[in-house]
Length: 245
Ligand SMILES: NC(=O)c1ccc[n+]([C@@H]2O[C@H](COP(=O)([O-])OP(=O)(O)OC[C@H]3O[C@@H](n4cnc5c(N)ncnc54)[C@H](OP(=O)(O)O)[C@@H]3O)[C@@H](O)[C@H]2O)c1
Image (cartoon, rainbow, N blue to C red; front, top):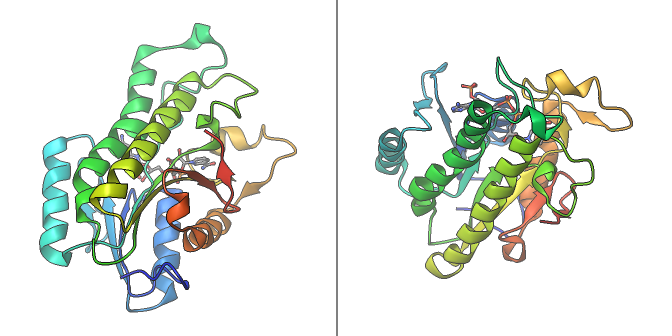
């Protein structure tokens, strides 16, 4: 159960973290676990590295459905669902600097991870959110997905995959507002964080702060603790402020 009024939403909560192997996902998981003993952290990964983790092929609908069913069987309903999967570069491809670099294989892979996985998470994990009290489903988005904030151009695939994700978040928030009024659905922007996803690019970033994973997780946990039903459908950044669509 999470108490949205007063505030450690992770206290005594059942929290599922999808992508708990990632830089941000694993650090959030560790920090929430360290808070107290009475919460339940359910780590979902594509390749199990620890005994209690759930393995899920995130792009296989049957596997996602089975994993959600198993979690429901073991834990019943959930208080918090956090999707922290994401992709920016692959072994062969990096974000496009110009439209001339658009490549269908890269575009498909980026959309699969950044957009299609959240669609499947929405379909199979939103029904697990408790109806008895407040609950949160949050997806890692990015400021780069904001249309109105796009002043630099470039990174066509990543930007567009996150913009599409933002539409999923908004649309799901509307459905939840009548099918599960207690549920809050948000996107999160963590800032620039030193992880495997960003490491090829962080050296080039000047005049911009790069957070450690620990800092980012702390900020995101605090931001999640401060949201309420007025925030549903929005993208919230590490400071707790709304990122314009
Ligand atoms: N780091 C930043 O500066 C930054 C900025 C803005 C937004 N974000 C967003 O924050 C989220 C987390 O990023 P991060 O920095 O923690 O990245 P990360 O350390 O690279 O973690 C990425 C996660 O996504 C999973 N993943 C990647 N490809 C996958 C696939 N094909 N199928 C299933 N899972 C896959 C990874 O699983 P494996 O461990 O199995 O590979 C890992 O759990 C992403 O959505 C990212 O877009 C990050």
